[in-house]
Image (cartoon, rainbow, N blue to C red):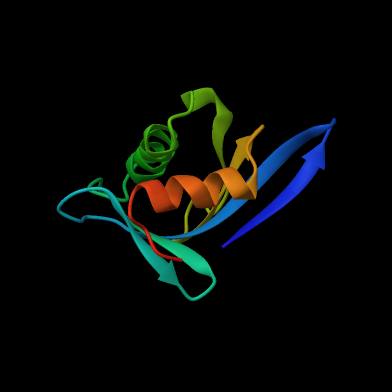
Length: 102
């Protein structure tokens, strides 16, 4: 679901996500194999779903949008987000705060 590394002395968290576009609303659903399943309201056209994923996750985690980037999967349902200066422990705590069981 995620991998944490230290880069330049700061944590960098990679989150592996399975995206379901064209949903009624954007939400985190839970685990889907080794990935976090996320429903997005946006259509997968012209990068709209990718942008919504980044914006949704920055709000979901309470972070500045600039700290969340789409690192892999621009044309796939399997995506990797990278979050700067954020740990796996912090991520798990945020999931629990939102009632997401992992």
